[in-house]
Image: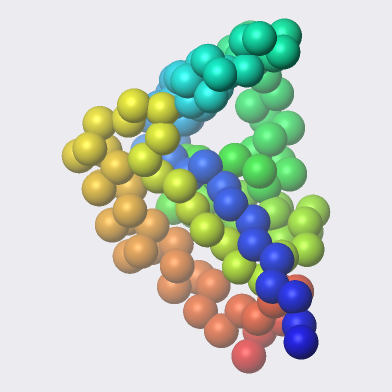
Length: 126
């Protein structure tokens, strides 16, 4: 039986790259703050935005954000750096407004997903 490996990316998507980057940075910072609440007793603190490697996380495909073309490129970065069979995306994190989440999901479905139609695990095309 073949093992399925998934990659979950935090995704922010907008028609213009700058708003997506801004919302991604604010949401990840908030996501870390919320996630660290229960870990304070073990000395874990949220990442400071100034010390978080935003560019490095985008270049390796761990965070996917920007306009649709940049998101496609970000997923290709992930395909180059990780071995996975399934990509899951999380659009609703860190207190993003509901309408922004819904816009990003629709834009992702309309413009990003078709770029990967026929792609098999390992990046091969059907």
